[in-house]
Image (cartoon, rainbow, N blue to C red; front, side, top):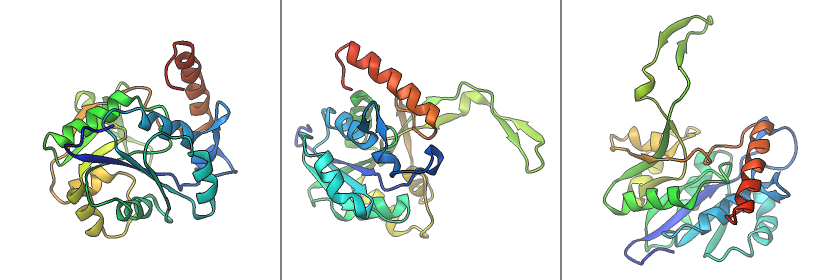
Length: 236
């Protein structure tokens, strides 16, 4: 938990349906190694040293189910009804933050295995004065720019490309202003909203285990990582 110098909260938008995983429950409530993805995500966030509060935006019809699911989390927790879009869910969660919170992280529930070290790294960078910080990994594949006709138009410089992860961290007033000035579109990346305001976004190292669960194959990889963690006595 944080040291009191700056209260830090994590917002977890978890109201998405996750169609690419196939029909069924909302993505965050799908199971991973026998437990909902959301539980894995929140449990990992709660192990971070510098987090004081977690606010989770869940589907309106799953608030009580989610409350029971997360009852054992040993960190202050607030549940809110999410909106139709990710942006709506984050905006609703922002309204639920107590006034003393001045550092806000936003984390995808679909990245349930993010190590605590990444969470603390992002939080520390914002507390040190950054307006916005994102964890990233360098791109390992060659990236081609392809037009609508399926023709390669350019090979991009891989050394300058980064894959973005979460949690993304912000000074609270910066993130609130970004949402207030938004055009109402469905932003997939809070840092992108902040960039459009002209705010500088910094980068810290991410982690290969902070990948996003999108397809059934991702669940297989996540389960393998959990098996390895549990065998070594880590957080599962």
